[in-house]
Image (cartoon, rainbow, N blue to C red; front, side, top):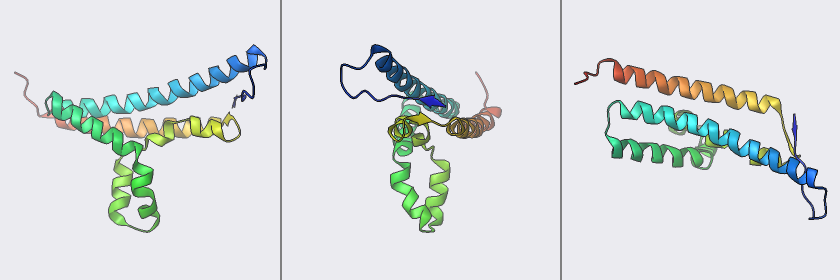
Length: 142
């Protein structure tokens, strides 16, 4: 497990501050990398059929929907709404990749959490690239 130490005042040893900065930097880079991988797969799928601006609009919309997916759909899913369940499943949940929320608790990142997020990434990117391949399959290049 990764251990993060919280800085309480400026007189703490420099190695404690560096350790916390290293953990925070790792969590930011790790989450950003997973999010970027997912967004690139979506952009690739869109670019097989669409021009630049529609691809950018769809990727931006999916990014914002993914950031708000818990807020938009989770309560309705728990209430039994079938349409919210479908939208919550299809929309990527970027909150799985933000480790700052995990670090805020007890300051550790469980390795099982990293494995679960990686499995989510592999499933989402695999599904998105499968759709991209299906869209590109009968496309004529000129």
